Image 1 (tube, rainbow, N blue to C red):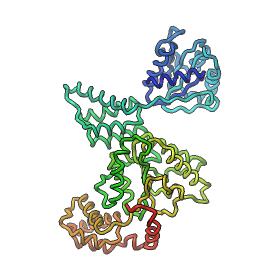
Image 2: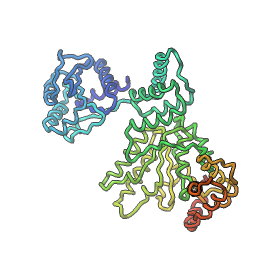
Image 3: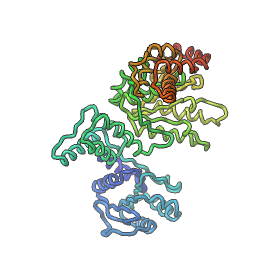
Image 4: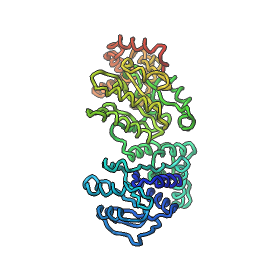
Length: 492
């Protein structure tokens, strides 16, 4: 708070008479402004439509509060105040869009450059000023709590819980505690305290089971719905068959990324390969392995017919992803969003430029996982070294991995893999992707239910023989993709 008070003092010294503060945490804004008044020896008032003008902090000049809820009367009073008082108007901006007289009054207040004249502070969760007064204003953002402050908040809530429960201690471990603190980043003090309280009060413990619910609540709190979606079920990494090089690569960088310190944090990876080969599951598994929230960028929802809206949507999505940091940002089938075309009015080119700028300049720990099926449609600026840390090729699984994939999907459906000959199933499914193997298991289950029997080896083999995998249907395209990947990518 001390830094905020200092920075606000500098704004006042610049003689700006209209300050805009966007925040969901109104009590903390008022607390900070009260500290500013005390530091500078100024008088202050708050205004709301329910309470009118009320004193804030140590008031000077006007001895009585003015219980006027009329916005015009409040602005006239402020305009004629000969003192350098601070007036904090809460949720005032909607009236400005309904009444041009209020806009003019506020503009006249803002245009005065004399030191001994009042300053107006507009406070709300989101403020859009009319163009007439926009250039006379200065925007200010309260600093978010540091990791040290977040840790103190969690410990304070743990102490309060302990006092309410006869001295019982909150159970946790240091790794989980640090993970919770990192996942609270991007929230205000009040929001972080409320979420820490919710995590603790349920069972008096902070465990790994609390992390997904914490991330879900944070996503909903930040209101990120739209072009970004929250993936609630991030697969555990054990549920991904194969991909040994990708798994090793991620494990080597996990601690560095989660620590969040240093200049060379991992940026992200691109996964290219055949459809159904496990790229999407691997993207989910990164978040599951690192214990981070997974956000998916929907390029279909991103595009808008109005000029400039698509790029604005992308910038907003990337900004919100940074608010959720540390997190994993999954861009599925990225070629659909950035493949340059001649008939889109240059939208895809502008989207690519916006994305590349963010990738090179971002400071927040957002690990990007991009998946692509058609690598030939991707612009060279995106796939060159430096944009991503590594380019992995996800090929069709070999026999050993196919057997593992059968085991995983059978076990998920409460079928004992030990009762089946997985090696024979793996040999019979040569050329199958992971998704096609899963569908073979599902189709066999349907067939077994229709026959009122249990799934067995012969039923699975028959389903496999009846399936034409994509590797046969599009063999030429797959060969071309493998030829391109040779020497350009790392086999996942």
